[in-house]
Length: 544
Image (cartoon, rainbow, N blue to C red; front, side, top):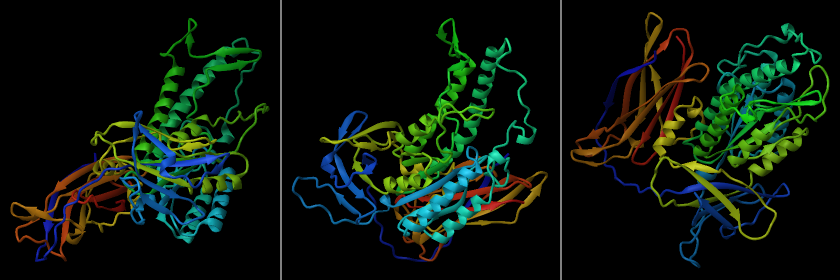
C-alpha cells in the first residue's frame, strides 16, 4: 500500500518590492505537417498553400512556421489583415526538435538492434550538430530512460553503447533493471519442445485452429506489456514544448490484426465464425478487440501529447514463400504503418539500415507547423484534424489525426503518470527534491520528502490580505518496472500580508511516501505556477 500524508508548507519571508503582471492565455492548436513528393521533402510552401479542418470545419491559419535542414528556420505570424506587415521572427521553444529513441528489446534480435544502433550513431556523428535534443530509452517489462534530453554527443554515444552491451528478450535477457525482457510462460530455446503432431494427423485442422487461437491470446497478452510502455513514452512528453518525436526501433510489436483465414494444405480455414457469420463472442474476436484497443490507445495518447511516431522495423523485410522448420512469416507492417501515419510520423523500413536512418533524419527535419485558434473552450474532448495542400501536385502529407483539447494543467497531470516525465521536461522553474531519514515498520518504509522552489520563480498577485501565489504541487511514485503507484496533487496559495514576497526565500513543501522495503522506486515531483503555467520537476530513485 502506497500512501501520502502529513503535508505542510513553510514560508520564509522578509521584504521585496515586486511588480505583479497578469497573463492572458491565447490558445493556439499547432499541427506539424510533413509534406513529401516521391519520398523527398517539399519545401517553399506558405500558409496560403494549406487548408486545415477541425471536426470537418475549416479553420483560419493564424500562425505558420517552416523548418528544414538546409536553410535558416523562419517563423512568422500570419497578418490579421491582408497586406499588413508580419511580425519580426522570434525563436520559439515550441518548434525545437526533441527526439526520444525508444529501443524495443521485446521484439528485436540483438543482431538487428545493434546494427540499427550503429547506423543511428553514424548519422549522429555525421549530421547532428547540437541544434536539437536526443533522449534514449528502452522497452522491456516497462520503459526506462538511459539518457534524458541532451545535445551532448558524448553522452548520446555512451547511452547507445550501454544499450548495445545488454541483451534482448530473444536471448532471455534480464539485465536492464526496470526495463528488461518481458518474462512469461516461455521456455528457453534450449528446452523448447517440438510439436508431436503433423499435417498427416486426422485432427490436424482442429489442432491448427487451436494453435492459432493460442498464438492470438499470446499476442494479445504481449500487447498489454508493450502498449503501456509506448504510452508512457508519449505521456512523458505531454507537457514538453517542441517538435516531439519518438523514434521507435522495433520488429513486430504484435499489434497487427488477427489472421482469420488460415491455409491448411489445399484448404482454407476461416476462424472466428459460427453458422457462416462472424461470432464476436469467439476467442479470436476477443483477441482482436484487445489489439484494436491497444492501437487506438497509442494513437490517442500520442496525439494528445503532440508526439509523432517514426517507427523503424529493424528486423528488415521477410519475403513470402519462406520454408523450413523455423520459417519466418512474410513481414506485416500494417499496424506500425498505421500508428506512424495517424500520429504525423512515418514508417521507415527495408533491409538497408543506412537508408532507413537517412530517411528518418531527412523527413523528420523538414516540416511546417500550422496554428489555429479553436472557437470552443477547453472541453477535454478528442477532435479530428485534417490538412490538405491547395493546388495540383503529387503530395503526401503526414500530420496527427486529432488532438485532445486539454489545458496545460491536464497535460502535466498526464505527464506525471509516466516515469519518464522528469527526464523529458525542459522546465525553467528551479525545483529541488530532498529525502529525509526513513523509518521502517514491518515491510514498509516511510520516507519524508521535501520540495523546494524559490519565491522569485513564482508569480504573486494582490489578494485580500497582501499578495498570494497560486501553486500546485504534484507527487508521483513508480515501481521498478515503471508502474505508476501514486499520482496526486496538492493546491497551495502561499501569501504575504506584507504585500511583497521574499526575494531570497523558499517555498518548502513537506510530505512523506510509504514504499515496500527492499524494492526500488522512483519519486517524481513537479511544481506548477497556475498563474504563469511555469513548471519545474525533480526526481529521485529510492531503495531502502
